[in-house]
Length: 355
Image (cartoon, rainbow, N blue to C red; front, side):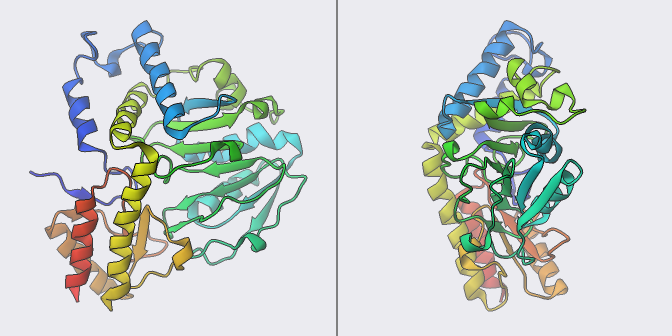
């Protein structure tokens, strides 16, 4: 059966070249006579692989030398607790921008650990607040926001200005999709299953000075950024195969021209779909234009039966997993890095024909 165009929000489509290379190396990695899945994470061969992936990640995102890159587990959801555990001890207070489904979950999780304030909450998750609508407490330990909101299909078109308050960002659904000035952030974290590989690996990029923040009492060693950095992300067995696949994805990304080239590729895909939706006369996108996500286009006809017919016809044309999150209903086209231009072209064609 030919591969379908998988528009899933995650776990998401992976580059076919990466899957082919992984398949070729599945039983024998680099002449070792064993799969990466079988290798000890303490072996010389695996440590060399691990350190190589860290260097590739640092190069791909131009991560400055005064930042550590950690390869952890537990997904972004565990970071909803790890972030306050590691940073909230500075002042006991933190600011959160609540702009979608997962940023709201992060906000609620942090509330268990200290004085957490909603520095921005429009209540309308189809728009990102204007800079003037964001208030930053100068005494906050950090300011947290989610760059791209998969459920509501929004993306921050600017980096919040927070002065001396460290900026923390959940980039799970946008990391590696466009250039990022890492030096503007204190912490960046992301689950792998959108743009970096399969589920199971979490990447955390943290500025060195923040490693010295006092931990909240009761913070487990495995959730301590400082302890993980000191132990090379290997306090316990890391997601060995996930790290290996991230390395293959980074190779593929480099061959495709890097993050800047990928950003142009992603913008083309998004424009094709949004233009088709806006001109369709059938579907509408509730997200205001300035806030529209490049990764996740959310739209609907406003009628469940009509949307269901569209989903059925899309599946017949090898376009799958287009049903939106239950919070919004309708249709969601997740077009991460690995989605080829042809997938967006085929979807736009169906949107135009559906009337």
